[in-house]
Length: 90
Image (tube, rainbow, N blue to C red; front, side):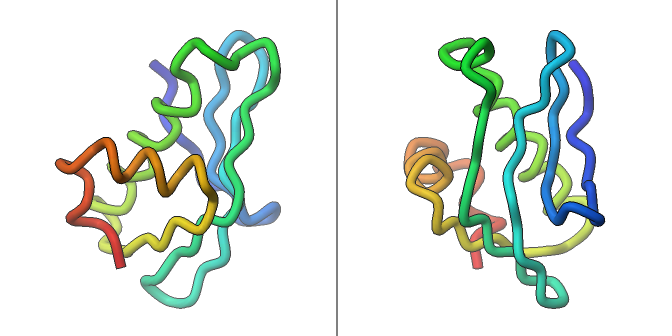
C-alpha cells in the first residue's frame, strides 16, 4: 500500500492507487487540522480507497502529533465508525 502524502502546496493529503489520486483537503493551524472535504475518483469509489486514505491520515496525525476536526460528512462518519482512531480528534 502506498503511503499517504502531505501535499502542502495544495493543502491536501493524497493517496495514489491505480494511477489515480484520492485526497482530503485540509486547513492547518499549528497542530490542528480541519478536513472539510474528502474525494476519491469515481473509478476508485467502492474499493476502500477513501478509507485507506483516512487510515493514512490518522497514522500521520499520530506520528506528527496533530489533531483532526473532520467537517466533511465522509470523514466525520469514518471517525464515528472507527472508535480506535478517535484519539487524534481535536
